[in-house]
Amino acid sequence: MNDSQTENRLLDKVRQAVADYMTSEGCGCCSNAEKHEKHKARLAKLLKVPMYGDGSGYDFNRFRTLERRHGK
Image (cartoon, rainbow, N blue to C red; front, top):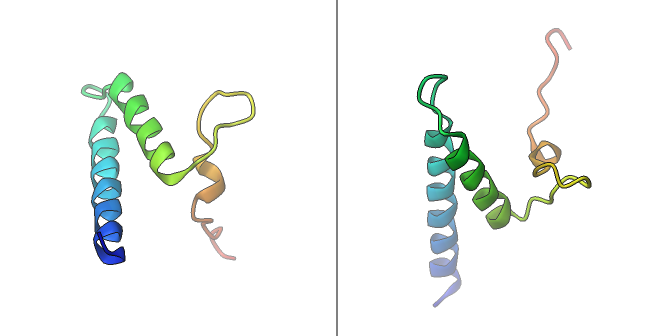
């Protein structure tokens, strides 16, 4: 398998993981917390996102886009 094929397979996996995560969020009446947590863990593993020191979840926050404050 060449580098391009490897990259495409990884991209396919990430796209699928993000899609699964997004659809598991749902709205208040149709959310599925169990699936949501499962998909979050899958994304964290694929993206090598570390857990918080206390093991309470994955530290996606360290990778988020920093939003500019209004007026600054």
